Image 1 (cartoon, rainbow, N blue to C red):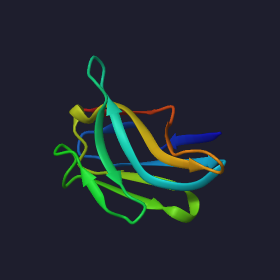
Image 2: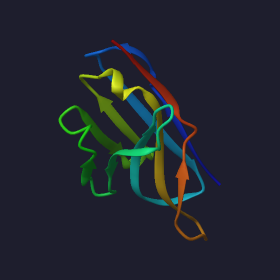
Image 3: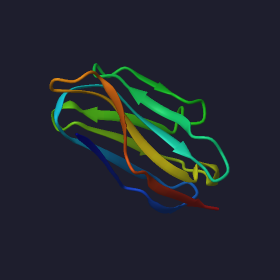
Length: 120
């Protein structure tokens, strides 16, 4: 089994910054893509940013220029640095990872989510 644990959420004023972390642990052979998604109240979950094992990144238009995704492969950890936060960034942020466990096929895992609230 694999667990993803997020941390770093909280309450911040508009214009402020937060750094989210997500550490994967368990029966991990390899992690391919890792990413961050978010879900605001009454809205569907949406992709924020993704990063491949080789470091290639892709961002939602809403995140470009303000958010930076990175990862530490040795620690099985992905980060999301969020700057210039806006009230519309308020959401529960979830990390996800494409994990191949020993003896198993690759599958997606999700964290439990961390709340980010941006006040105006």
